[in-house]
Length: 426
Image (tube, rainbow, N blue to C red; front, top):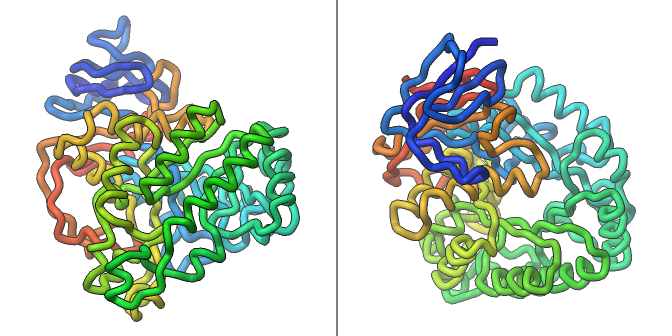
């Protein structure tokens, strides 16, 4: 493999507290060094990154690639290509595929698909319970041996609290993080919008705060008893942020994330029955959005993820409650995060950390850093590039986004994986 140097870029590596204009040297697919010079280093290729940001490849903590099971919506090949154009080099997929990721054979199938057709790294969460049915524990040890980086029951309920406690105990025994999508099955009651003035006016089935917050409180009690490491996924409310802060103050091993769209949109965005804004958990009010931003600023929420869910066109063309929830979000993860920097809510280093080293730390993988000997997964960004999102030109097979027509600053110019340029807009 060739030697490559990325010259004169603003290198931002929060994992190592690096933020300076310097060079990155790559040899045999790994980071050789970061600095102005490298002794006896003769590059075969040079990338001039003057006036560009050079950051670790983005790690997306939640992306549904639709394969296996829903290939008519998207697949591993199409979505990993879309990821690389957005600077994302590692994706974590939840276990609610078809078949469910509850046995090693499914993990091996995904790894084989990624090896044959993928363009980015893909890691998987295993099912917490067999078939996600909440009745019997999955073979957690076998899933860990097969390469699963954590466990989750996605949005499927585990109604029996004793089974849930046993699952947490088993996960703790095997040192596996449990990823929790907090939702009280009965309180959410197949709703599609935040319980508030907008859902009342539009006559949409509501989802109250308590569907999320009571579930979090329930989980936290079991986490305290079992001492399992837990990560709460895609929080949506101010009260949820408070509960996570309280849990951290108590010393519980908990972290949490938020989807990028929750930091910009509110319930007002569904006021014209815009099905592109139909997401779960639902968009809540401005106070909640501001609390989520504050949670990111103060590191109560460790990660910003895409919560990528591509859909075919028909999935969004029914009456609002009948449409499928989710946004095709890989290609807006970085732009929406950089917009928080442009708007003065986040400093650049904090924003980059929420996309790189922090999610990698939660997954327990050697990604999201430019440390010496780490894989050379790198994203180069032109911060001065101004562009407008055209949904029809998304590289993802899913064109379902509420951000069509939004103007952004900052665009990926190069993506490298294992030292190889896998995307370039030049």
